[in-house]
Amino acid sequence: MTDTGLDAVTGAFSYSGRAIAAALAGEGRRIRTLTGHPERAPEGTGIEVRPLDFDDPVRLAASLQGVTTLYNTYWIRFAHGRADHEVAVANSRTLFAAAHRAGVRRIVHVSITNPSIESPFPYFRGKAMVERALAETAGSFAIVRPAVIFGGDGVLLNNIAWLLRRFPIFPVGGDGGYRLRPVHVDDLARLCVRLGAESSDTVVDAVGPDRPTFRQMVEMIGDAIGHRRPIVPVPPLAVPLLASVVGLAVSDVVLTRDEYFAMAGGLADTDGEATAPTRLSEWLAADGADLGTGYANELVRHFERRDRAR
Image (tube, rainbow, N blue to C red; front, side):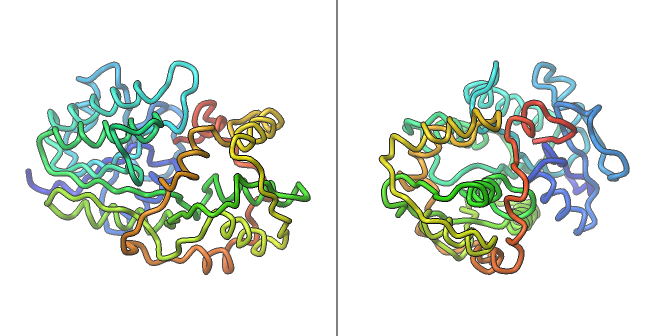
C-alpha cells in the first residue's frame, strides 16, 4: 500500500491520543479519529471523525479505508458497568481485523510496561493478550510500552498534587521504595509517530531518563506545588482501602487494588535505556506549580464523558 498521507488515531481528542494527533499534524499528516461518541467531537479541529463501533466490523473497516497507519490508544483502565478487560481484548481483536480488511499498512499500538499472559492482574494480562493478537494480525506493527505518563492533563500526578494540597499527610504503602519510569505524553507521541514511519515489527518501552521511587515522586510533586507533606508508611493492604474512601468523596475510582499492587510489584519500572528525553524532575520544576488545583475525575473522563474522549 502506498502512503496516502492519512492516519487514524483512536481517541484523538483524549489524553495520549490528542498528543499523537498533534504530533502527526506537525508532520503534515491528515488525521482521522475513531471514537465511540462521534457526535461529541469538538468542532474546528480539522480531524475527520468516524465511529469506533466494535459491534459493526464492516462499518469499522469502512472507517479505516484509505488509512496508512493506525495509532491505537483504545483500552480501559478498570472494569466499569459492562466494560471489562476481557471485553477490551475482544474489541481490540475486532479493531485489528478491521484494519487488516481495510488495507491499513501499519499499526502502532500503545500498551504497558511488563505485560504478561501469566499476570495475576487483568490489566497487564489483557494488554499481553492484545499484543499477541496484534502480532498475529497480517501487516507491520510497533508496540509502545509506557508506564506512568505525565504532562498535559494527565490524571495520576495531578491527583497526587490534589491530595497534597488538601491533606496534612500523604500515606504510602510500605516505604514507597518501588520505582517508576515516567514518560512525558508529548515524548510518547513523538516516539509513536517515529515508529509509525518505519516498517519493521518493533516493541519499545516508552520511558524517560528519571527513575524515581514512588516516595521520591510524591516529594517532587509536593516541592513543585509548594505543599510538601509528611509521608506516612501504611500497610500495603490499607492503600486500596484509603483510596476507596477518597473515591467515595469524589465519586471516582482513585486507585484500584490491582493498580497499587502492580506498581508496588515493580511493573511500572524497567531497566532499559531511556527512549524519551524529558526528565520528570525538570518538568515538575518548570511546569508543575499548577498541578492539583482541580481534581481529574476518571469516571467523568472515560465513562460519563462530559465532552471528553478517552
